[in-house]
Image (cartoon, rainbow, N blue to C red; front, side):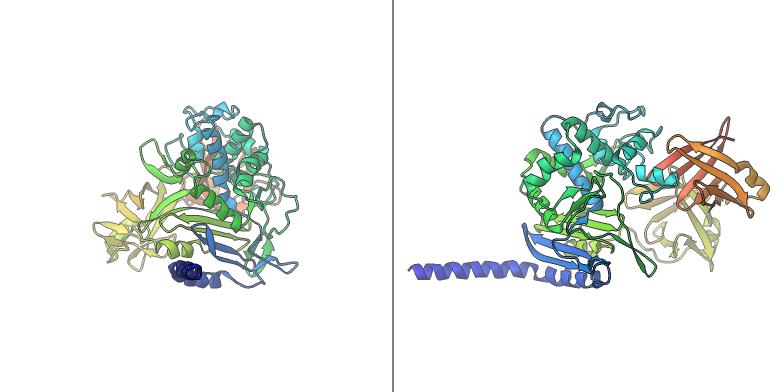
Length: 532
């Protein structure tokens, strides 16, 4: 009787194992295919892909080299930097303080960081958590000054002080969503000031140790030796170079970890071990002042629905490191992917568990007429930002100059394949619609200044906000910018009084004082005043 019972039990266990295997066999085949393209061999950087079902890993493989100089391969235990995947740990530190009634979503940020300027509307903790504060990204401001991240060893105080020196915001708190690392730098500072503990020590005690993340820490000292850490790399043409984050800023990024530890983290959350209250907050999406719900949550993850499948995810990129962490609750699937120099296959991984994303934009049918192309062609600027778009006429068709996208009719509107274009009746501008975002563009005349006209822009301009000089002078018939010794950047005229240098828009303003404003996507209107 006992033998029969044992045999039945073993048979039952074996059937369950086969069923579990069958559930994931198709996914394993897809993962093997993805990993084959991800693996460029031990002569190049690589990474680790780990996938679990209900907390149990069924795919865990490493690829490429952790250290090209010493010929050391990546393993499933290799430590990488997770980039912005790190933000959810900073958010959780804040959520723990909220759970313990030491912090509140509605608290004024200046209660904890009084050195932050008063911008005329209360900036709340919830705005930091959801990138709706309007704070300019500190790394982008340093880049405008001529010293982007990676060119100086920035400290946490460097970042905090620069954030607090900004006289304006990109927008008033709660009005818009704009991804900015500054939010999570200030959250890390807030956690320190409330807990009276270094941020790294707080996370070790209340996050990493309870979860069992034994191979996880913050990179709060970039010179510290970390055993089993992969070196970060970047490709420049055919050459592979080291690309390490030589800075001591963290909170927005800077988490050193493994894929195994990241899956422990998700499993801990999925079992509500931090408590129901903050499990709910973690997945609560931010809401703008106009009532629009955004994908970013209080737990610093993106909450998306793809083909009816929920994806809770976040990607990361710091120097040569890449990270991606995702959870598919309907399937019980968790995915962790870390790398040290290659683009991660996050899109393919999403398609494996949620299917291909369906484009919301009709690619259109027939191209617009030659007459419409003639009227549409021209330069356009986003009314509320620094983005410019140009429509050109070529071979009797209208093209977006930024790519080989032909404007076609899609019903009674126009489509580029990635956005809808609704032109004004008099073709003086258009409305651009991408997903749920609606941007208004106005037509401007292109600017081709003479040498005499360029003279009005010559001089030295200084910005208190980023403590930098812009030296403008004419060389070889062109307006040139120098921000530091040995640098000469040609200013490309766009429209009247506006120039591009790289991805930065420089707009001159002639009033009582001559000023210029420098703008990039994450940091707009950094003001420089003419000194001479």
